[in-house]
Amino acid sequence: MLAPEQHALLDELYWNTNQTVTSLCTQFGLTAAQVSKLITPLPAGFDCWWCQQPMSYRKRSERNDARRAFRHLTCSCGAEQPEGVDHPGLVDSDAAIVAPLFESRERDSWYRGQRHTAKVGPMSDVVRHGVKAMAEVGLRWTGAFVVVEAFDSLDGVAHRLQGLPTRTLVVPALTDLMRNEGDSLALFFRLVAGGWRVISAAPSLLSHHEYDGWCDDLVDRWSPMAQSGSRSSRLHLV
Ligand SMILES: [Zn+2]
Image (cartoon, helix red, strand yellow):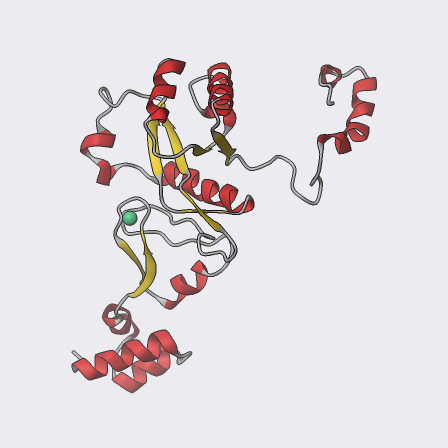
């Protein structure tokens, strides 16, 4: 439809100038649909965390959105890409973002046999929150993501984690490492006692403008509730 040099010019003008699509249509004698079909995707400079294919922007709005906070690029495989990995000042970390799997892979073959068709929506959330939690403590995620079977015993899960090449884990929530809170916390304490660092990616219930310090700061605010004899009186903050 376009000579190679014209095609290259169209790409150049589309990606590197603010010339409107309407204006490009006029200049090249194309419809808007033809222009969007002809545009060569722009490499985004990183690979999808799930399928490992190079990511690219298919249109200007994708590139612009990806540079804004709280917007993210979605790979053609369906995986949403975390934002903030290229934030300056972060230190590379070998930390693994962990998604606990509460079913045996023997019974549930999606992970091994049909990885490309797995529903990655919830996994994308785990990764995006994990990358954010790491950035908040100054660490840059370098791509380690593991799905760990966490449906059986404490020993079993701990043994699987021991096989990882890192001693820093990023988990969705401390109480969601295993199937119930007790086992989850037992695993957490065992890991920490064994020298692991466990970063929780669960968004805090209190935002920074409400609370950004030590727990003692909250005692005054909470004590009136305790005096009222409500159920909260059982909660004692020290
Ligand atoms: Zn992908």
